[in-house]
Structure formats: structure tokens, C-alpha cells
Image 1 (cartoon, rainbow, N blue to C red):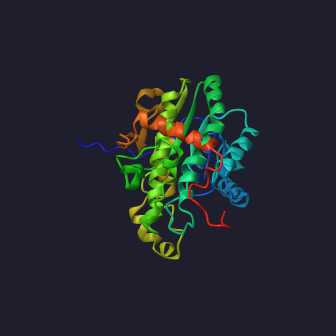
Image 2 (cartoon, one colour):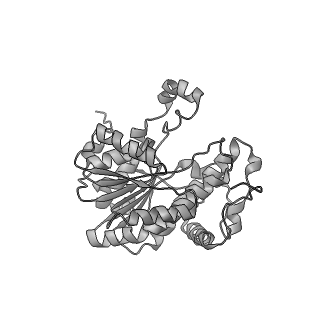
Image 3 (tube, rainbow, N blue to C red):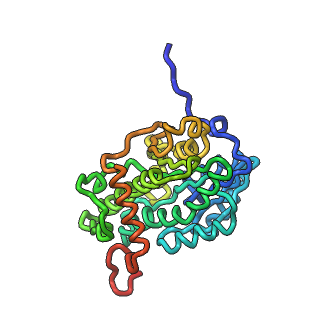
Length: 325
């Protein structure tokens, strides 16, 4: 009489990825780690992006012990804390591969009040990710043309509808709009102010790139992973409270399911009109974006962001004291 939707199962709901190449950023732990695991188990060669070689190679070893099936996992250095590092990371990957079927932009700085410079959240999450994406975009396009499909998956957040990002007057008409100082919001609120704007800009980037895309077999999909416990290891108190936290937050593995659906479900290709260029809540639920995410505003934001990447002295976004980085 009553039907209940079955939970997402990556073993049965993802297509065979044998021969395909994937790249996942921020992948040595958490959601990224689980994304790499399941993509490799479906046969893909997955490049695991991580800033630390030690942490990255340790994660590869851990995955191999868990079992990666017929796939392969390769550590590659990936740091997008600055646009320069993002470009270098992308170029390093390009020197290792000849095709890129799946890109999962998973890595990000969280709204951590311990950060000395909170503007780094916007610089990393938006500008670093954007530079990395633009560096890899030509290969994604070429792969989609040659092999029939490629997917760019952005892990963003519903935070794009909250805090400073929900301001109806927000605009990105000039580079100076990215230099707005929100440190007066306070030690706790200021990081989330920058985080929310970074997530808004990430989503706008995909909307604008999808609008301008001339490659019919290249998909742009944005997802929210859900309310995931990726932080309980951070503080002593949260480590102690992790059993309670886990009652209200899903695991990193469950948090990877929406990324996996976007990256490797055949439903994306079978119903392109429904999914391409869209934003999804877990798992695979296409959802309206925040009111500030319009095509016009998104294209304006992307144009301004690209101008920022070319502007000498643009970064860091806020002034540093003498002697600071």
C-alpha cells in the first residue's frame, strides 16, 4: 500500500567506469575519500587530489586496503589556496593524463573561526577552484567530444542562500566587490559570511559555464552533499561528542552519494534536460537555486572573477599587516 524509496546504493546505481579517468579534489579524507573509493570500485582510474603528499599517499594506501575493485587510485598534488597554486596543480594533472571524464570539485575551506585570515575562504573556495576548473576545462571539453561524455561536478552548499549570500543587493560588477570586509561580523560569524559568498560564487560559476557551454556532451552539475559530519575530528570537544554528533549528521560515505550520482549515474545522461546545469540535494533531487543565482548575475560574476584572476595585486583580498603573507 505504501512505497518507500530505496536508499542510494553506489554498487548498483553507478555505471561501469572502466577506461574512464576521474579527478577528485580534497580527496584524502571525508566526502572526497569516499567519492574516490566508489568511483574506483566501478573501474575508473581516479586521481586523488590532496595538498599533502604524505596524507595523499597514506589515503591511497588506506583505500587499497579497503578494496578499490578493478579501478586504480593515484595521488596527485592539488592545492588551490591561491590561483597560482591552482594553475600549477591543474597543469601537473594535465601532464599525467590524456582524458578527463569526471571532475569532482570537492575540496573547500570550511567556515573555521580558527583561521587567521577569513578572506582566504573566498579566495580558496571560489578563485582557487575557478582557476583549477578553467585550467582543466579544455581537456573536459575535448574528452566530451572524443569519447561522448564528460562531467564537471561541483560540491557546493545550501549556504549560498544564507548569511551575506542572501543579500538581495549583492553584486559582482567590479573586482572591488570581492574585497568587501566582513571581519566586523565577529570571529564566529565572519568565516560563515565569506563561506556563504564563496558557495554562491561557486554555484554562479557553474550556471554561467553551463550557459556558455558549446559542447553538447559536457555536463555541469552542482550538488549539496547534505549535513555531513566532516568536522568532529577537528576539536577535542567534538571528538568526545562524536557519538552524539553522528545522531544528527550523516557519515562522509553517505555524504558522497550525491557527488557519485552526479558523476556516474546513467540517469544523468538519460535525462539530460532534468539534470544538466542544475543543483541537487541528496540524492539526485533537483532543487531551485537561491534567488541570487540568475543567469545574468552569474555571467556578470564570472566575467568579473576572470578579470580578478588577471589583475595584478588582486590577492590576498584583504590587506595584510607588514610581515604577514
